[in-house]
Structures are given as structure tokens and as C-alpha cells.
Length: 91
Image 1 (spheres, rainbow, N blue to C red):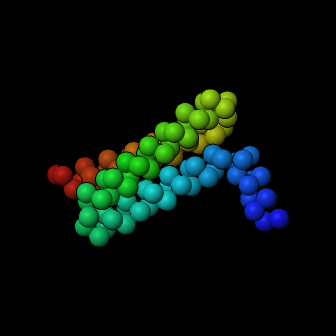
Image 2: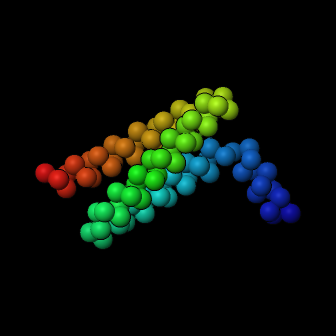
Image 3: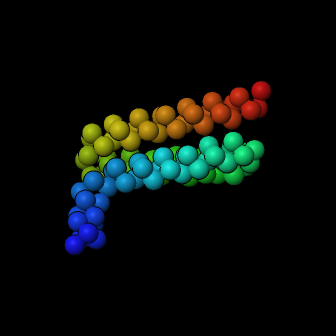
């Protein structure tokens, strides 16, 4: 029963799951950055941005315009935070 309801929720609200996954990958990158492992942090955060891009493209295909707006907001936030974190380290 629980698996069936979770599957139903996930199929209707896949944007939430996709963006949550992207944010978790991004958080893992922030954790790697705080542990002075910048190479791994860039990989984690790049994957997070890639997931957000895929969610945005899939939202366009599915004509989920509100989900697209939220996805773009997450994408811009992650790109800004990544640029800010690595830009500050390089200067």
C-alpha cells in the first residue's frame, strides 16, 4: 500500500523529486567544499545543475509551466551559489 501510494505521488509530482535530488547533490557538493575537496565539490555541483537542466527540459516537454518556473529558479540559484563559491576561491 505504501509503495503504491509513493509511486502514485512520484508519477504526479516528478518535478518535486527531481529538484529535491538536484538540491541534495548540490548540498553534497557544498559539504565537499567545506571539507577542502574542491575537485569533488565541482563534480557534485555540476551533476546537480545537470539534473536541474534535465528537469527543466522535461517540464517543457510535459508542458508543466509552473514546474518549469520553479526548476529555472533552482537552476539559477545553484549556478549563482556555485559561481560565488568557486569564484571566491579563485581570487
